[in-house]
Picture 1 (cartoon, helix red, strand yellow):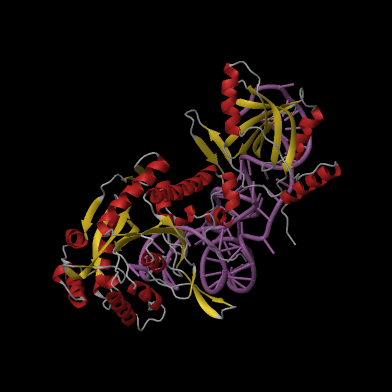
Picture 2 (cartoon, rainbow, N blue to C red):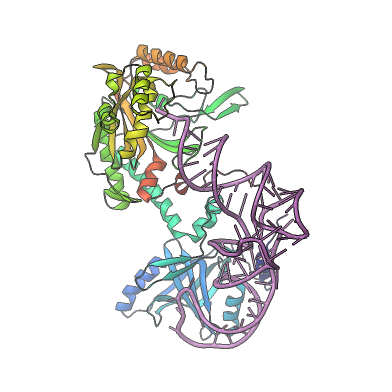
Length: 505
RNA sequence: GACUCCGUAGCUCAAUGGCAGAGCAGUUGCCUCUUAAGCAAUUGGUUGAGGGUUCGAAUCCCCCCGGGGUCACCA
């Protein structure tokens, strides 16, 4: 049984009263002639032409100022707010009283009337008739907006508790217009990504989320079970191996935008399910993918924010191509004074790090690539504020990337960084089936004593590759992180409509 | 997973060992151009749950639940 608060009980009593008067608090239909923004815009024109403007608007009551024989109310709809003016002259005292007594903040109403301007100059609907279209029983977290002299709006006592905001996103959205704006921008970003890739002749595809084998990244998967097949399945951790199968099938340019699932920890930039964009482009190498990437992100930034320069916290990030490019060996040398090329084994590199930085604590058992990654994280990454490509990665942490012809320890791979974190990851894809099989075997050995991290051998993927895969460049990007950057939000939970929470109680 | 901080009225917050409070929201009046409307009165609490110390606990201790932050993990 639902437990009602005292405030809810009062509203339930009002609901009873309405019912007793034969008023349906939840009619199936409503009518409107204008949204709030439309009616205000049209009124500007009608005023100049000295023409009366009738309108019927709908929306949710956000603020009321009742004055006995008249009443001012702001209702909010999809594109803004409109003030309603009710007066006993046009209605009756009983109707104004009814409005003031029976309607609460949060109720949806429909109002019909004629546009007018108040003494203070606000375009306002002078109401001749109104009706309830949906009653709100639970009070929305109350918030009041104060408009200062200079036009800035100050929010008083709004919904701020991050837990409540995430768990009850519906209430957050209802009372915090800027949250609605964030998710409109999110939709615009994804639309712009599609628009860019479509214009470059990429084909959008959908590959399995439920997979008999997982792969394409190093992450622990979520496991599930298919009853009819009586088979364990995994939620995908990347799209990579399926998308590259499509290149074998002559599709040349493919992309997918969808959800990946990684059974790992959460942080301001990690969520167990996240939206990923991957694309694969036949006959391109990683330098061409870099160019595509900077073009694409400049296009999206411009499309969504109106500029290629974006404010993110204290930084102004400039997406305009060409981005800064930092070769990994050189970047590590510049920031840590360690030349990884001089230390070709994990053991040597570990000793070099400890010799120069006795206080740092790299994992003594880590393979060379992990130690290089450690140096990047400790010294280089924090310096990568403006959009930057960091390129040429160690082979042993990149089992799906092609080695550099000149250096078997290094692969043709880059990651895009900004604001000190990783945004995307790309490489010239390994398309040699014999080399790929070797890499799978190496990974199997590296993780032999770690059942959870073990990367499974994907025989079908190798079978596909043996038919012949064109040389190609591939790209993956955390879309949520891009949304964070373009909306100036510093937690991934702020750009997810329903971020995960523990079960209540 | 580790560390750390937090949880008080519908919302935002006070009260740091001594009567659980304020603003907004709500309720009842008054008010025909308000906009954080105003004026007057007023309702609302298992202080996240449980246990302990104490004459006395929102406050101190233990444990649990939930959350924030930092770190770890995350090719």
